[in-house]
Image 1 (cartoon, one colour):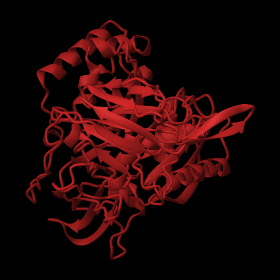
Image 2 (cartoon, one colour):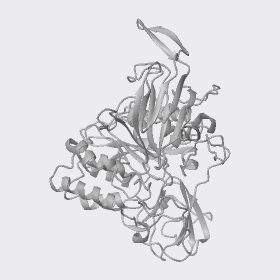
Image 3 (tube, helix red, strand yellow):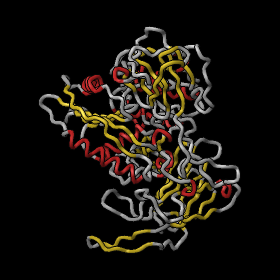
Image 4 (cartoon, one colour):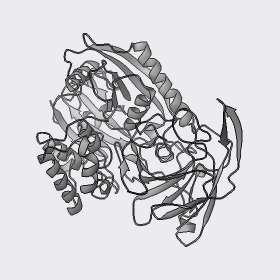
Length: 528
């Protein structure tokens, strides 16, 4: 979940100006204004969806109890601006009401500035300037810049001189200038005259690849932030205390963070690691969740890649995430994995009833981005994070779109640990005429007591390709689910998927008085 902030709002989809095109370099010396960096072209269909939602707002029923009804009636799932998880979480937090609707609507329509400049060191003050495109931006002399908010995937070089010249320092995380110096050692606070935005380059690796025209089965990864995600993360731990309430100890919070990064280390194949740079206890004077968070942010003044705020018990009804921060109401591992998943760009894992078409929000147990215990993120999300190799996914369009049948044998995803098994993890179909994909995968090799997914179960996920997406964008929906030994064909978004029997590449183990099948692979036949 997330707070209302100009950072973290999804930019994916053709409705938002500049989402899929190349970024244009602004002319040096031409200051980017708030209005020039937050324009969005609103289609009639999106305007109709917003008008529909507004009827629920005016009626006082834009709430969780009416969410499914509103979701269907207002065609929410057709608009990435509304269906990236942000709107859902504002509804759940009772922030979709007459008072907050104008601001919430503006948030849903806004193109996200990648960089915002604040006038105080806590990053919770007046916005002096914001920009989205790569390029050089001036700040007026004496503007008093003291904090830079930097989205994941971008780096910002701060200059003491105009025109992006002179003494400088480069940052890739939010930067508290009260604690930042230029290369000369001079303080950067109130001294930045210009800044340059650029992409964080992702070094070549087996996980960051391109697909050539001669590789029709290659599945492109369009996530531009892989260079920022797959590296050592600096993390600050903040223990928030309030009189009369309990908060886990700093040692407990740090251990939870280490457990999370142990999981990331396996799932990312060693690409993502942890450096805890600071631990701090801050006391707040309000029992109101929003006020307490604001107080904690001001006192923490964090410049880390990720800041983990552990909130006092009973103060906040839910855990949530901002652009580079998570606010946790308790100590469950899934809450850490879920909220930090949002920071890394993941939205929610949903399911769809194949009979009624009804969406069960948070219903996918194969990912921590649902609401239930899980073992991992799901395959489309692992791919989006850059945690799969080129040969581990196979695109089927070249065969099935021409009337053919594609046969593939998949190995289970499991923990996504490094494996010598040459079989792919998933088959992928780029859904014609859309920016959506269908990922077909086997989440688990065997049943365990984490969730109710049997070994060898096949899931078909609909996910956005997400060219140019930012924020919490990689949300998924399970469109089909069936057993490895099911005899029938199953349909998902016009594609037919059928197990090739006998799917008997498994061993049987005896546990707790039960026989459990442990699958090594599952063979499937796919056609249109």
